[in-house]
Image 1 (cartoon, helix red, strand yellow):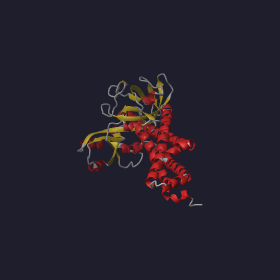
Image 2: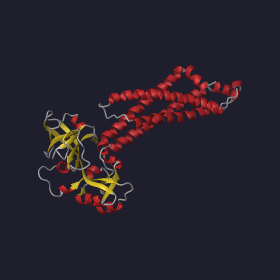
Image 3: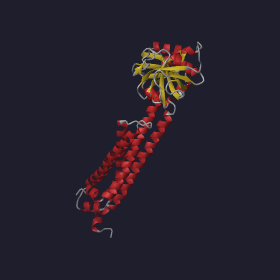
Image 4: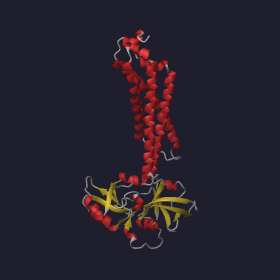
Length: 375
């Protein structure tokens, strides 16, 4: 028997058309997953790379904490003495515009996401080339995204307005960014000059401030007492991602688009197999009249659905991976195996669910139809 599988050979054109639609949806799923991963990396890879578990912000900064929060020296000192806190240190974050004033790309405008930290801190990166913050004095360590603009070790950047000079002393050869801007690591005093736009000597008050307290906590640590004492609020590293400019909006937009794509795929597959089941009504009635159980016919039909979905999804995913590989480096695109596997699995799963609704019509087919009961 195997009516459904024989249909695949008999109606190759119609199933090829349906398969092409599913394959195109799979291509879109891969591309959307890659764009979502790429946008997320461009927004928060700098925060993700920090070797911390939590970050404490001023409790008054309830949103956009990296631009609104300010903590004092007493705050990170209190956190460092709290039980269960392995490490607590000041962390600065600011966005700055600068111009290359010495180097091969003299005159080039460069945007910087400046992360300020103590030079001997575990937060300070180990450069691939050049010197570290501890070795480089008041210099900065740049990441691959800034180097791709033509900035090299030894170049000097001058910040807008404050005229603070930043000498590039090291390079971390990784694409690390924050808010779609390449990260530059600096010591805290350099960060404070940029953050407050103050050249020359810093006021005493400014020397005691930072954006947040970078924390490494033991699992299960109760921090409510120190939060209350310092008027700060601790968030997990993952929870701080929403404070990156545009990250939450981008993530929710991409999730909404992917949700609609999967819903459309279920509707398209369901509609196709509904029409196909209606067209096969006479054949299904004949099988029932010959004694085929309804459960067998349902399994046969679902095998047809799964064969079409799996085959088309595999082809579409392969095409999507090829297109995505060509986009790497030209757009914020990142191929993530778990994201692509989830996208493909959802397409097959939701398509099957949509088809199940369609093939349930098989249970209502009367075997007497095969004997001319409708005539």
